[in-house]
Image (cartoon, rainbow, N blue to C red; front, side, top):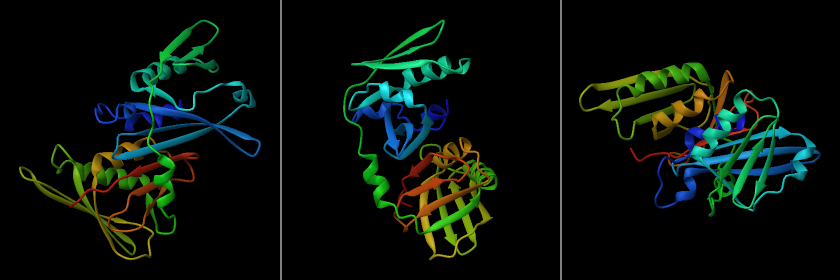
Length: 240
């Protein structure tokens, strides 16, 4: 369920130019003796990655080179998981099959290629880190979002040593500004972001303190937390 809850929000609703973004990518990985299932989703403006440790029996799971589960299928799997502690999963050509003692669920998979998310991860340096109280940041974003334009929810984020300032403007309602205390001792940064994307990511996290890695005024923001193991969110900036 964690795999789904932490990635479903950034699956594209409708993406004619790259329809595979209307699905989440499922992969299996191994690090030493530890096995993981990893789910990745993106709508072209943000990317969510969640990996979860699984039992060794995952070795028996045959997967397609690219296993893409459509948004609707992800929602059905989430419902299927709700009242079941254990179930088996199989991938059979273009369908995923989930089975428990009393139920069977068959999901048709999408065919196609998924963007190279690893390339995006590789360009983000983890050196320039801002540490922020997640709950305070979330509350501030929700307040600021009330004064954004409906379509893009654009906000300006200014980061100075020890302080983050959020500002937004709406032609009808006026403007809003909020200052937050942060742990940061790097150079000043000024970026534009879609406020909703931050709200969506922070709402699925549990950690008290989050880490935001931003290299420059034009670079993506990578969000993680020590208490949200296996989870990463990347948000692309907007032009101000």
